[in-house]
Picture 1 (cartoon, helix red, strand yellow):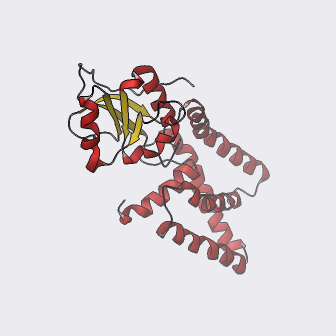
Picture 2 (cartoon, one colour; picture 1 turned 90 degrees about the vertical axis):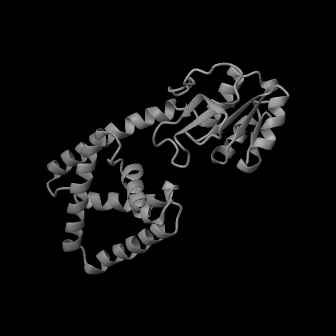
Picture 3 (cartoon, helix red, strand yellow; picture 1 turned 135 degrees about the vertical axis):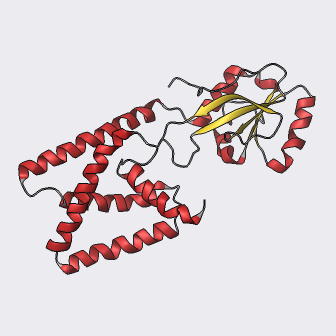
Length: 251
């Protein structure tokens, strides 16, 4: 991605993956916890700058500033874990922002926990119910295709899914593909009566490929994986109904 977008992606990872906060395009249920985070974080920063010894405040900044710089400039921002130490520091500062009154502090902490639960519980349900994309692919191939005469090509974006297929599908029925040699691989199979399929990102399939299934992941289940992939068939022999809904596989 464009390096100019890195600051926005960095902030988004900390806010959404780390603190459960709201970001444009996400559900409004994240707004209450976001508002509380902002209020307590700003209060904590203000309190720390006034009440902590200068040496302690400088020590905190001496870690936050260089670590923020190195994650922003050097690390792979798709690996959300690199930003989580900053999330931990933000939580400590948020704790400093709790009101001095014990009762009000308990109410504030309880409100923060409740609003965060509104975000976390649906995500936990999604994680429990969601099926890895590789498992979805294996199940779809096993239930829909005659595997002895079927070959599935995986694009570069989904090449690692081949590890899901090694134990459950016939040898060489799923292959990794390179765009420059895909036609050379596909044509002989098609001429020999094989049903040939390919897994691509939406709207990335070559011509003559028709979508037959849509594999989906819930948001925030895997930051490294595209949230959907489309399974296409090469020159289908029969009419294919338009595909819109995600393929659902029971847990």
